[in-house]
Length: 482
Ligand code: SIN
Image (cartoon, rainbow, N blue to C red; front, side):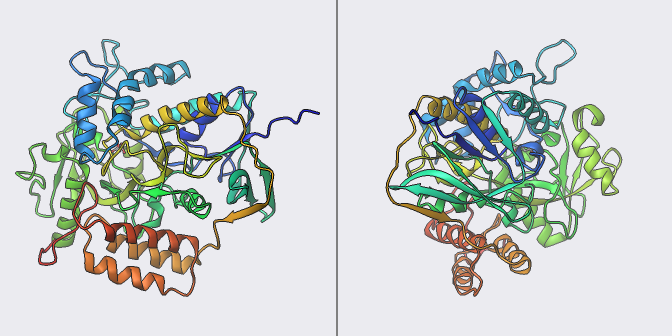
C-alpha cells in the first residue's frame, strides 16, 4: 500500500511562513502558529514597505550597491544580486495576491525613501501599515488554499529526528497537551530575537524560539552577533515591546533633536537623519545617555498623517502624544537579527529535513546590517523559493533510531527580565569587550539554564569572537566615552 506523504510542517505565520506554505502547493502543508488567531508575527508590525527598483532612474544594480554598503560588504553578494533583481517581480506577485500598494495622484506607485537608500524605492501599503496589509492578503490566500491546514495556539518545542533526518515536530497547546506531527520536512519561519532585549520593536513572540530549536537539533548558525537596533521606537518608559516610529517619517522630512532642541545628526554623516541605521541608533543611544531624551520633530514633515502614517499616529495618541503638534520621544530598540540558522540560497540548514526562512535564517543577504525595507522582501522571495524547492523534493526517508531534539526549559519570568536587561546593556548598540566577557561568564554561572539563557550565551560568545566593529556590531574602544 502506498503511504500518503506526511505534510511539510511550517512553523510561523509571518510573511516568510505564509509565502513558503503557498508556494509548496500542491504538497500538503501544516502551518503552525503560536498565537491562536495567527497574529503576533513581527511581519504584522512592519511599517516600512518593500524596496524594489521600480523607478526608471533606479536599477537592481543600485539597489544591490545600497544593500552591500548598508551590510558593510559582509553580505553574500550572489544572494543580494538575486534579491534585488527579483524585487520588482515580488511586488507584481503581491499585487496578484490582492495587495494594494499606495499610489500617487497620477496613479503611479508611490515610492518612498528610507535610511541607506540613495533614491526613493520603497513601496508601501496602507501608508505605514505595509506588513499588516501584506499579512492579511497572504493569510486570506492561505486560508482558502486546499493544500494548507492551519493550526494556531501551538508552541513547537522539539524536533523529531530519524537517522539524523528531521521528520517531525512536537508542539504544546494552551492546555499543556503535547501534539506530535510527522513531517516530510520542517520549515522554521519563527522570526527573530528582538524580544530577548529590554527594548524592542518586535512582538513578544520574537524571542528566538525557532533559532533555539534549530540549534538543539545541531543546525549550524552564523553571524549571531549582528543585531540591528532601530533608532526610533516610541520611548515609553517601563515598556518592553515598543511601538516603532518608522524611518519613513525621516524620509518625509522629520528630524531628530536632542534635549536642547539641537539637530542630532547635523554634521555627523552625509546622509544626515537618513544615515544607516546603526549610525543613527548609536547617536540616539549616546544622546539619551548624555542629555536624557531624544525627540523626533515631525513639524516639517510632508504628507498627511492620517493616510501616510496612521499606525504611528495611533500609537502616539494612545500614549498621550499628538505627533501633529508635539515632538515624539524616541529610543533605539532591538529590531532585526541579521544572523541566524545558516542556510543555503534555497533555505536548507545543515541538518537534513530542516529548513528555515525569514529572520530566523541567515543566508548572508543582509550582511552585517540590513538595509531598510529589505526584510519583507527577503521573507517573500526566500519563502517562495523554499516552498517551490520543497514541492519538488521527495521526502527524505529516515527509518532507524529516532531521537528528540528538545528546545529545553523556559526561564522563569524574573530571570528572563534580568536576561533582557543584561543583553540590552551588554550587546546593545554599543558594546565593550570587557563587559561582553564579564557578562558571558556571569550568564554561564546562572543556576537556571533556560533556553533563552543558552541563546544569549551564544550571542555574547559570537560578539566576543568578532574583535572589530562591523555594521551593527559596534565595539567601543576601552578609553572611548560612548
Ligand atoms: C521602518 O519602518 O523604519 C522599518 C523598516 C525596516 O525595518 O526595514
